Length: 576
Image: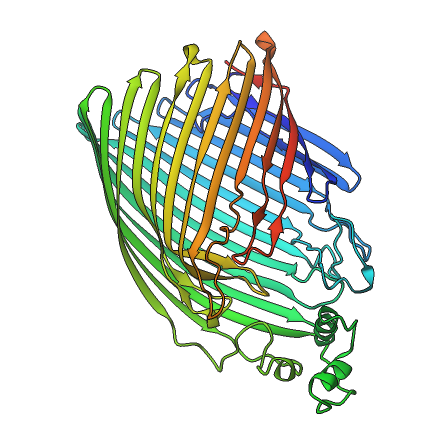
């Protein structure tokens, strides 16, 4: 048996925001191998590992087989299965939440002829996992303060769900046309999602959000490449189409909502009759009783089509200098139809003056919104070789991200395309005969119509007027002697909104961008023991850290700095 294969164990320890330690276990490949390894005649392997913890069992199985069928044809199959009991204890009792049950399989076929190479891949993934179980800050009722990893959800482990089936078929071909090379990339994707979460995280049904969604998408790309000593160039075209059907729902108990509203206002838990009687000045009788279950639905369909043409030219006026210019033209068209029937509810008209609490209600279908966007984005780059080991580079690039529609919150309408201009310069290389590798970079970017996710009862996308960011990144890897690897990364970022007023009287200008910590980095160390014909043994450790970060534009929700410590053991990395 020859080839590269590994079954590796990584055990990590995380410090949460309150200083508690949460054990984690992850079993993964640490010795990557190419999809098709020409050195391998037959490659097989299977790994099984278990980690028993206070809150359940974690297991994972990996398998791989690579078989040459002839001189020009080879096949590969791989399997993956992961199972873990829930690791968030329920304060109300029952099995811990957030279980994992995931399976995936892949089959690949490669044909390699004199002038043609073509790969076909078929992937399937099935998840039957539990949905996320949040911890409420304000709506835990009589449960009081919970431990960091506990949840107060009233839903059981079978009701909370994150089920997914995904099928992906793709093909990639390289055709030698003499001075030119033609590349073809084709793909088809189908997925089916059934999801339900306890959004409020408390012991009563204030909000349970779910979605049942199906998607079919296909794409085709053609690229023509030319290479010479002085000039490299390529031109290409691509097309993408997606059809989507989504049935989303917000479910709740009206008495639970009344109790949550009362507690949020410091009144304790009150039934609907007493709460609404006080809010209406006695117009609603205290005998009013809310419905036990209300379901608000959003039924949406969409068709998205995108196409583009692009080109890139690399010119070498000297042996140590490259000048690069490129451009892309994109055209996107999106069409969405949304139907939101009025629910059977008695609380919403009194409490919020509308037929529903969480979603906009319409009579029948909304007028099908259609939007079309076009964009031209150039880029310019240069690379100067200071020595065979060290390169200096600079990039100026214009980027574009298509707009879209807030299907789950249609009253928010559509959001516009996001555009970015980025400027970067850096130096990278290796010293001392490859014992020191470094990559240093500085950057500055500006956004217009930055797409921002706003997390409320239902998440939607908004456009910030303008934003900017600047900073630097550094990566250093050291190999002082055979077997020992030391590494470190450091990132500094100052990203802020420069103009963002979501509504009159509110200005987020100057606030930090969401999910953009000012400082982050890592340090790693590992040592490889050569076991000769038995393979090799890798033992190492990693530390990652980041400063605090915010999760919304008003900078009210923040995550304090975190540190992650881990160790990795790779007992078998076999080489031919």
